[in-house]
Length: 448
Image (cartoon, rainbow, N blue to C red; front, side):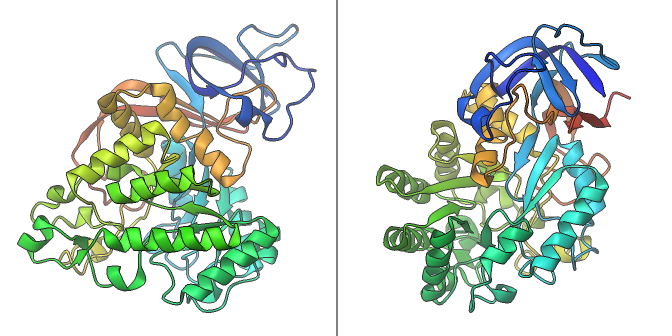
């Protein structure tokens, strides 16, 4: 099928080169991401056979089966989300693959990575293959699972990472605090370094964070909540970086939450360590004072920290100390949220909020919209090691087409995710996805 998208505002990472018409030599794998530039201009896009056929002028002999006037809309690469729990297998009462893949399309997310903390965990190749097969059958976003770093996620014996990689895992993670036994992480890094794998770790010390539900500070003290100190993050980061120096492993640091953590990341980058990092989009907007009177929608992991931490995170995304922004999508059912704050399950739904909240960060921080799109498209795609997140001739036609001026109110009715809990319920956000194109096919069209 051939589609012409006319008059849209091309926004974000794109490649303008000699290969602008069908028949040109295809781009090398990954070349588009490396050569992409941040653009903000009005131009046409032409799609054919699931790929981008031309940017700008209509190729000679190109006859579109469908033409769409996108005047007033922005055309961005399909968004890439580094952390989206889809709750299958094992937690279908919280969400299903069908509901969360629909939420991804609604949010303009065309590629996503899911953590391995399912039931059973993704520690066997058969489980990974089954999940990928289920996802392909839905013809929605492309799914890239993370394999469990240890068997059963028990933190004791490392998995057969090579076999899991053959089944489709793009990296290996241990969601939650670091292993109590640091030697396990050392062995995992040695294994991963041998095969060139990336380990995804959350910087949280097992003992210092145990039992905490809020940021250690005045707010937690006033509310009588057990705290998670910032040193739980910094001690873990020191451990991770020292093990990286000893092994040469590549690590992706998940969900940085503090100003001190940002500073340690900056120093580690200056030292030349092979690392990348992300932040959850809600941490760019909220702090511990927003907990109010025990609002369990703000019970997340890591917890919201002080305002100075939030400000440091916002600056770090702009400067590139933090590479990417993710949704940290974690659907939670009503039974687990309608409890006292300390007993409620952590997590919030964010697939459909990743775009508007990132745009909000850009407006408030003075960053360009093109840079904002880069942080939720090309940068996470490079971390995952996939060819996505860039608009370029010859690349897959995965697109997020959104209205940057549409105001909408977040409510259970406006969210497609089965998980309806988010700190932003009742908030009016600016910017909403209108069309999602995956592999050259329109999978969602809100205008219809």
